[in-house]
Length: 376
Image 1 (tube, one colour):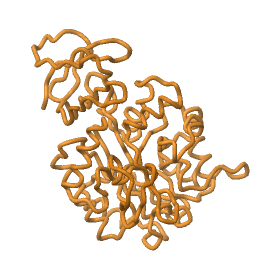
Image 2: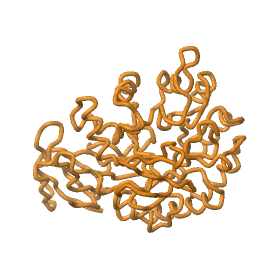
Image 3: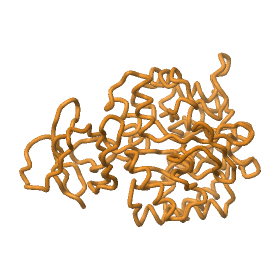
Image 4: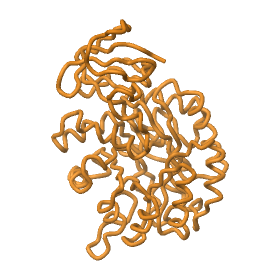
């Protein structure tokens, strides 16, 4: 575990220093009383390392098809974008391929990534609406919720499935939510045509988030606010893909106004094309064409994004007028709170030394538990 004294960094509007001992932040400000190795922050802005809860890949690697080294390649790329921790999102796929993706992720979670830490597995499906499937292969969607399948997946994952998206209207879906939570899984609702009442029933059963709110789901209607209305009115966190393509800037501002700044989580929903030029790519079993940075299926349906959280940070600042530290809450303390990661997402004594140094919107260095995993 790393120990050092990081000085000359900007935090909460002032130049200060941070003491890191054995991968944990032990002090903000003060002198280097322990005589630790000094590191110069060069006046850069210091932020908590970003956390991406929903991503299907980057740097030419698709999560569904990736082996351990592929996932580590994603981790290294994410570190260059200021990400200290991420969940790999497994798109609805065959049982065989899903188990393969789970096995690869488990190995990286347990043995290390060499970059941004892989913190868990997100299953986006297969318990999803065929009407709002987005890029999900319809033939592989679950017509009735099956708890035994998710138990099997969690056992294969060694307990590392941390997040799951389901559609409340699928028969049996609401009923299994408490059981999924007992398995240690945070449950989100999305890819859904659910009405307001069934969406509220899902929240009362234990759903705590809405997956990419406003995308691939039934929208608000004055006579039935649907899943959109239930997500905004309830205590749920809401995911927002802040690339300017999936959501209008005014929609993101509406989420912040309705939910408060502590209940919106910026995610990328990125695919393997993130960090790469336009061209032909894959998303699970799907062919995807990226043109002008916009990822779509051949039929024109949007299929994930090429977004990074570093770019999303700039978008949130632009759209809201918030300073960098405020805007970064959407990708630091908020995802940590949603997932119950008590040692993540903040710069404070006792927290993991997951840190990113920013020069404007350029990432200069990223640390995971005090270990430098990227340096520009």
